[in-house]
Length: 296
Image 1 (cartoon, rainbow, N blue to C red):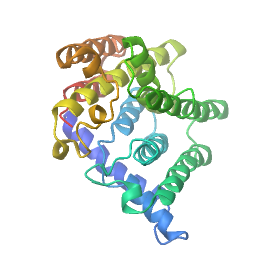
Image 2 (cartoon, rainbow, N blue to C red; image 1 turned 180 degrees about the vertical axis):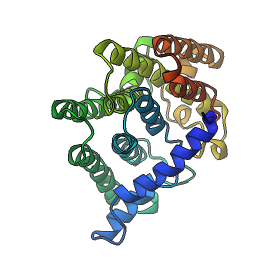
Image 3 (cartoon, helix red, strand yellow; image 1 turned 30 degrees about the horizontal axis):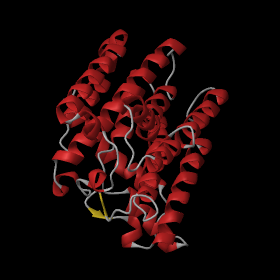
Image 4 (cartoon, rainbow, N blue to C red; image 1 turned 90 degrees about the vertical axis):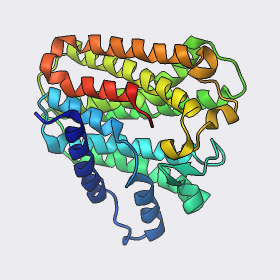
């Protein structure tokens, strides 16, 4: 079995080709919109959510081609959320993944349409490819991503985030926000990857979901620490943006040392939820390690 870095790099490079194939070509009308969609998705990002889907798919014995589609759907939703998140009406940021944000490179109207189009493409992919031997199971996958993306998931978390600027949140309130804003799509990536396979019962899926909940929160805690401690060149996005915008973070609430301790505790809880899976969960464990110790 290849080491984690080799495994991750191979999937990242292969998945880039998958995305290039699934996204509309820039030569197709409307060319500017399609070029902006490709600009916003390709050549950037850690692809953490697809990697989680691939790892869960391997655990569940899923076919690679099925997981590719599920992972692409999640990544398109994630990319759309970043495009909209960076717009002047939201966080008003100019840098993402080391290059100008979509509305800066193109314009605000195009950025809005890019997000809309990436979202609809995600659900088109989930519905036009066979991802499960059971049609009802595939319909459940569509619902899973829809809930994770909407007002009870990522979009709702963003609304809570915007409403909390300048306010002091309690730890439960901050966790509620990030369980939705960041965690919902991470959990969806894991479950969609697992649903592409067969043989996992409801209790096992619940264990994977709990792993995703812990990893999703840890991801955000580490993100807050990096936003406070790393520089813009390292992050590939504007450092210190949360503090400048007077947003509540785990660092402002707990301090950097306690935030790092919280990330370590979430990491341990995530690992415990995988205990029954043995060697099948190796890649998920390695991804949890990566999320907690990453530097960007």
